[in-house]
Picture 1 (cartoon, helix red, strand yellow):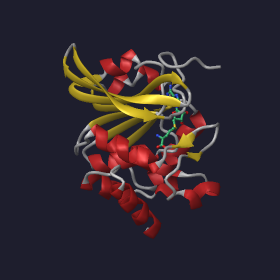
Picture 2 (cartoon, protein in one colour):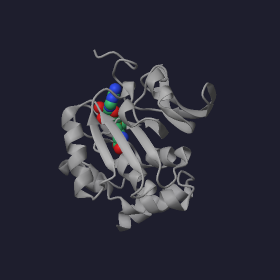
Picture 3 (tube, protein in one colour):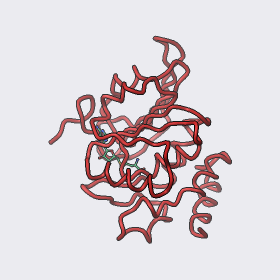
Length: 216
Ligand code: SAM
């Protein structure tokens, strides 16, 4: 817990954590429970850490930044693309509270299964992990107050925009360079009314699927 508190204080001092709700959630969620046994000791370094199948658990500062930019409120309905081992989904679920829902989609089945176990073990009953292609979104539970992707696509997948509520917000890393993308934020103001903002440079693994990158 001391290491977790130290990391959270550092992220607060660096300006990645801005609000008490994100601070509290990152203090409450044990990142080590969302790592492989070999990397548990690295849980409180501010680094992306390898999972399996060439994928990574996002760096804590990126999780903080996403949670702040999403401007989450208790009870919201949220869709995540790219579950990994489930850490970012757990932090979001902690902010939403028991009335909120997170639907998170992972394309690699063994990661989906591991994330599900991690979320059950840590007591997150308000997160549903779905195995599939997240570039198509998850129409079954749409529309969403918030949608965010933790994998990068050449352009924002149309189905995600369609599944956003009016008044909703979408965040996704977009770009064609595997080593540099831009975190794009879309605010949906009306049925056909959107505002787009560029929140700056990031690096994420590719979003592979029908509306993302093709499988090699
Ligand atoms: N959210 C994770 C966390 O909490 O650390 C980080 C996930 S990792 C950076 C990105 C994940 O997106 C990988 O697990 C990858 O398999 C997954 N992914 C890539 N393309 C996808 C797609 N089309 N649908 C669902 N998941 C996808």
